[in-house]
Image (cartoon, rainbow, N blue to C red; front, side):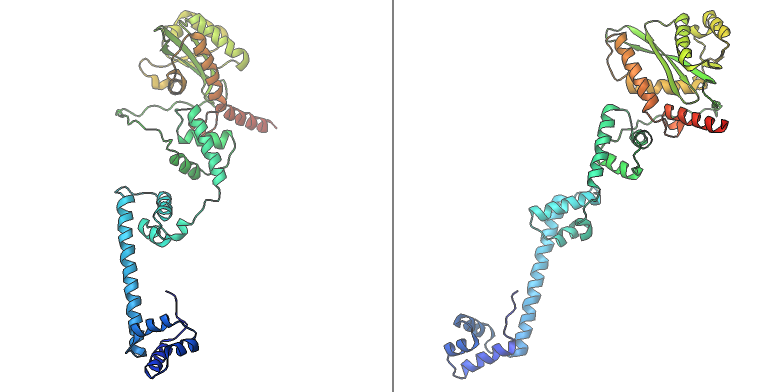
Length: 370
């Protein structure tokens, strides 16, 4: 409300002077006001003294305050019924809604903050690292698009250990959730069983390899097999061979090819399949000086390293596509194996890739010899 330049006592005195016989035009010229202003004073304050005028102004101010309070409460109720449901919203979402109310409903910032229960500092907050957050979001979207089965931890470990970004895991996870990239976790029924014997962890490369078969089908219904071979020390995929049939002679040939560039292992862990337990592979192993470590029948957990690798291979590439021919499968297998060894963080290795684990072991052995 605009404040008058005349005090209450000056207004009462002007009214009394006119009542005493002073002409209105003369009084108006003296005080520098219009005749309309004087008649407004007289209609409003005639017959009052200074204390009564002060009391009336207090009542008017109180009335205006109550009217404003009523309008604000009515506006708050309307906004709350329109925007707020039963679901509890995050502060960032409530801030966005408050800004929308201020922009669209012409509500004050104070009223909007009171409705959505946020502070005015929260309302005015602006992220300082918005550009870097956009970079994180771009990386997460690209990773989850190229690796549809990767969850948050694999994405974060890839950014931290493979790409070398120093972003905090809580910050990356916050952006990961805002993008709604969470994978649905299927609950699994756990069977009660005796405590399994832990597998021995090799202390150097080429101590123990593991190998196993997987089965799948082409688009025309023909069955195919894949022979997977890994090094148990750093979980590195050494080879994935694909064909309609993989007899013992073919298995020996694949192992010879791997040994040419990797070196000879001391032992190879495998199950009791006919390709492994037959005389062909036994003779090859004896000639090479390699021990074939057979697991007990019906206990695949004794070959858990390759079983875990098989699950990853099937989940991330083998069951993701419809295969046209063997060349198609072999090409994807080779490219995925490179990505697995060089780019995919492994939880069993502390979040590092198999090649990083191999490089760390090489650096430790070099420093020990020096």
